Image: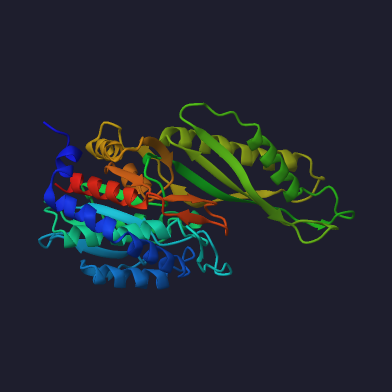
Length: 397
């Protein structure tokens, strides 16, 4: 019996969808540039979301709506009055890492598009719309409905807010496929989990000469950072911890009343992440204890507070699962060498809930991701679209 992808490649309706993607490739790139030019900082995705909702309606999706947190949803097929359980979800995030002060206009320079967020994730959004249109116009017969979702809060401090909301009421689709950035080879099936903390040390503070001897929050931050830097980590599962920002104080001649650091803990394995978290909490408390032991008699001790500001779950969709196998087969069928990978994407949330999920690039090439100089080239861009379409069809039948 042929594998699902081989069978799809001989299906007339799938061939029609593929040809549609090829014929409208320039339209997809134009949409990509237009969407990239609509500002969408994390937490302020409304304008871009409104434009995606318009596009969803234009390409024929049903029940297009914006949910309570700003996700834009549209349906292909019929849920027969149900809540969508058992459907296939195709998602792409709306937000960028860039704040409102960054100009997001797109520049065309020969074969290259330049602009903050042009690949991550204007490419994924344009691919989302293209797939919805191709599948609908070609009337590909799918047994399962397909829910197209443009999500908010995927980047940084967004902490996967949109996809967490989508799955907040026990929603259980049969498969989840995220489209994120460029490329046609990478298949993210391992969810890189993370826990992020703002750690604050507080003390009495005072004049750097007159009050010298009081417990110093800045010194405690230094002790904590140094101890984190000395941590040893296993090679497998890969696990990391980094101090990513520090701050505090009011002037050159004042012992601060408050100093802080931000920590980013990551692992592919939930148990390893939990164990790392325990070690780090111990380090933070010992840094406070060490500084308090040195304080002058009768002065106030330091207090430490670790506030969780980000919590991304980890897990894996096994390589043997039909979803991962479909992605591998589709990649090879299009002449590409698949690369199985780990990353932090919208797929983290369904993976952690035991729902089959992966993240795919949406074709083309890109560089300088998360920099104002980000660029995209549409070399073999349609290959990524066709690959995603084949995987959606394989899971929808």
